[in-house]
Image 1 (tube, rainbow, N blue to C red):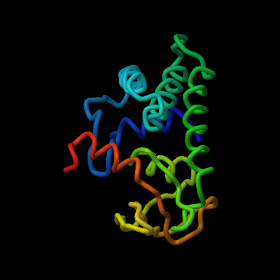
Image 2 (tube, rainbow, N blue to C red; image 1 turned 30 degrees about the vertical axis):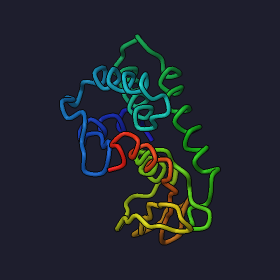
Image 3 (cartoon, rainbow, N blue to C red; image 1 turned 135 degrees about the vertical axis):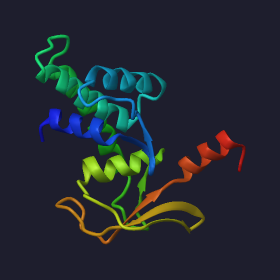
Image 4 (cartoon, rainbow, N blue to C red; image 1 turned 90 degrees about the vertical axis):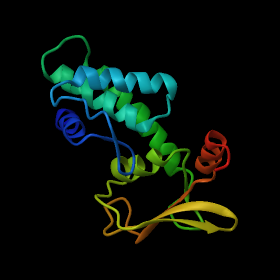
Amino acid sequence: ENLEAVAKTVLEYGVYDHPGTKVGMDFKKEDYKLALEKAQALLEDNPFNTRALFIASASMAAIVDSGDESYTMDDALKYYVRMMVLLDTIAATGNGDKDHPYYVVSIDNEYDFMRYYLELKGTGSQSVRNYKGHPFDVFELGSGSDYYARPEIWFEISRVTELENKLFGGL
């Protein structure tokens, strides 16, 4: 997939921090440098932010494709490789069924994993379920992909809820 086309798509449609919450809508379609700066700022705060790694990679690739020699395609690929290593780590935690869910530390990890790793094009309904005393995000899938064919995918979200409870004081 052409990273420039991906970067344009990210900038055109916005960046989803959480489902339904767009951030970065002040981006102009061609302002890849601003997108890169914002992604790098997010990565300073959280180097495991898969969404920021993707935006940094795609934006840097678009800058290179525009003829700007400030960066190289190898620089862009470093961000992409870091993102894929993190997504590989999530893949190593399970297989997506309820007895072997994927473990994540943020909601973004779920969506990035489904989109960029499993190449799932869309999800149906999403619900939070309790199973064996742990919270799970469960997605009913409309269709699978070449990499995931089950009708649903389970993510273990204990760490997500732990962090949210700490942040919001147990609300």
